[in-house]
Length: 213
Image 1 (tube, rainbow, N blue to C red):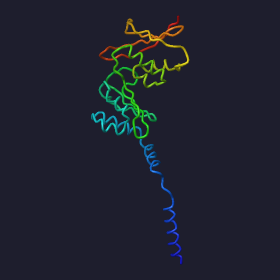
Image 2 (image 1 turned 90 degrees about the vertical axis):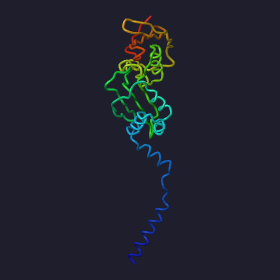
Image 3 (image 1 turned 90 degrees about the horizontal axis):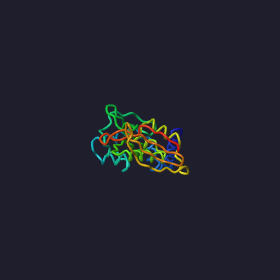
Image 4 (image 1 turned 30 degrees about the horizontal axis):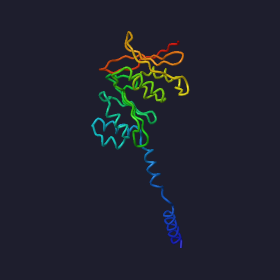
C-alpha cells in the first residue's frame, strides 16, 4: 500500500509539472541578453574589426556602431582597458592621438554594442571646435572627448548647456602664437577654444578661455 501511495504521489507531481507554464520565449531571450558580459561583446566587435569582417561585426553591433568603428582613422588600439558598467574602452599605449579618449569607447546594451566613440582625425580647426560645441549641447561627454582633452571637457561640461539661455554665435577661427583659436560669441562676451595640431595629425581643443565685453 505504501509503494502504491508513493507511485500515486509521483504521478501527481509529474502531472503538476506539466500544468506549470514555462517562461515565455521572449522572457528567456531577455534574460540571456542580460547575462551577456559587456566585455565579451566589446571584444567580439573589436576582433571582427581587426579581421575586417563586417558581417561578424553586424552580429554584435548596430549598423551605426559598425560604421563608426570601421571608419577609425588610426591604427588599432593595443590595450583593452576594461569596462565600467556597460562602457568598454580600448586605448593606445604607444602612440598619441587627438582628444581625451585615447582610442575607442564602446557602449554595450545586452548582446550588442549600440554606440562607438573614437579619437577623431579632424583636419580643420573649425570642425573640431564645432564638434566639441555640439557635444556640449547634447550633454555628451564621450563625444566631446573625441576632439578635446579631458581637462577641457571637464571644464566645459561643468556648466550645463541651457537651450533657453544665451545664444551662441560661431565667429570662425584664426591663428594665435601656438596654434589656432575659434570663437563663440554671446551677449556679454565670448568663449575661445584654443586648438593645437595639424592636418596630418589632426586638431584637438587643448584649452578654453572666456572674455567679457
